[in-house]
Amino acid sequence: MKRWIKWTAGSALLLAVIVAAAAASGLYLAEQKRNRYIDIKPRPVAYTTDAQTIERGRYLYASRGCTDCHGAQGTGREFVNDGKGTRLAGPNITAAGVVARYQPEDWNSVIRHGVKPNGRPLLVMPSEDYNRFTNDDLNALVSYVRQFTPQEGTQAVVELPRPAWVLYGLGAIPDAAARIDHQLAPSRPVPAGVTVANGQYVANMCIGCHGADLSGGKIPGGPPDWPAASDLRPGKDGSAMARYASSASFVTMLRTGKRPDGTPIQVMPFESLGQLSDVDAQALYLFLTAPGAHANLGGAGAGVGQAPAVKDVGVGAASVDAGSDAHLVRVEQPVLQPRPSNVPSVGSGLRMPG
Image (tube, rainbow, N blue to C red; front, side):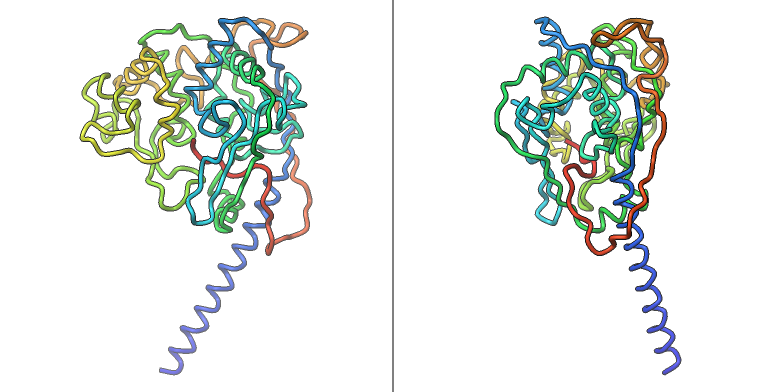
């Protein structure tokens, strides 16, 4: 009996040592990942004050999740606070905030690639959702944001429980920059309409939670009590789209946040989804219910993921080729001293939906 007790105690002690070592390693690796340098050369965004372009930018800002984290006026807002140690707020993105010194290429780097102007990864930024923006849509969104009245607002807030940083460091929770193919060309312009192609383009906004193939699963970086994202794969058995017998029922869900049976859906960014136009919402439904539709949104989707034609997309830039949006030069991992007992909060954090 005594031998069994000693063996059990020894095993428990060994397990505790292994867990502690894994946690310390994860925290150390998390700091390395947060401070890695991602050297990309993004194309500059073309600023404009054209009324039609600004209106397109307003629509994208309202319907693609920007308001959920940055507020309707761009002054920032808290968008996650579970009362259990996870609290996140998006920063002020008016000219009085974090974007005050942005250059034309910095907007591209942050929005499409999840990389800050200093080359470090942006973690509370769903850039995987925006990486497939056409050049015109990126220009429109940025031009609209630049119209915001400069005013005081919130700074980025990141408060995470230590286990979340451990998982991030060990690779279980990737940041947006790690999930993006930085050499993938921007999408070609897609004509507005209730078409599969337009629906596929709109569906790029779903990548952050539902994955590039829309198969769903645990939401990266989400609190433990958050439900898994649904499987939305077009035409697949088990797809949540089977609940919606018509585009009307699907659009109603986007507007109300409730399933056809009246039960509420948790975690979805309905403040933005409810702003989708009827055309885009119906096109999204068409894509998500089309048998055999190509759902690898993070890659080159048929008709919308191909390289754009040669044209000038920058400010004072020469013509660009039809290749990647940004040339990935290198990723440098800084040499840091271990800091297993105190990983500080930083000005950006794990990607959370919203």
